[in-house]
Image (cartoon, rainbow, N blue to C red; front, side, top):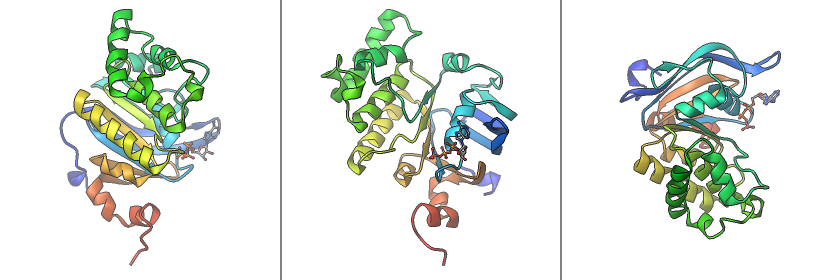
Length: 247
Ligand code: ATP
């Protein structure tokens, strides 16, 4: 897709260039470029094993980088540790985002572990108001929650320290369609209310409705990118995600 029509606007919050990453001797990502503007919602599409999780983990320093650079909020963070990136406002919600043996309230405390106690209290109050399904069960173990409720808790936990960019790994995995819609609505709400930018790794194309731009990964490489309206017309996306055969 032409660079002139990649749909970028506003100032970049994240710029990754030429990323390569993998596990031991097995390279998974090659030459991945990614840009996210402040407050932008971006979807990262890709089939099982295409490298979505590896990309999010590489951005978060949870897997080693073999090459490339990452700038966050205008600063080179390529060699920073996970906790240092978190302190700058980068958050990651993994597929298994909660501690099942801790209560809902303790999970939120873990999300805000580096905040002063008074701020933790205020932030919890705000999040419980936004997630009523959690507020009535503060002392319940996260293990007792349904799949959808666990995802909501994982999302709330990631929001505890008001990140500027949230990386979400398959928030819809294992959820019923109705719950997926609820999840998208909640993500939109926080995006509008707090201006948090999000990179959403997904196989579910419903998330294209929440995003302004998208990237498609295949075998660890970006094979398509651009505004979601353009991606919806892209043959590759139409075949792989919309079940539409090439004419
Ligand atoms: P999924 O939707 O199944 O999570 P994905 O797009 O997130 O897929 P990754 O999980 O990043 O893809 O996997 C990319 C490749 O890396 C796959 O070939 C996978 O087998 C491999 N891989 C993932 N995790 C590891 C690991 N811990 N050790 C070795 N190889 C791994």
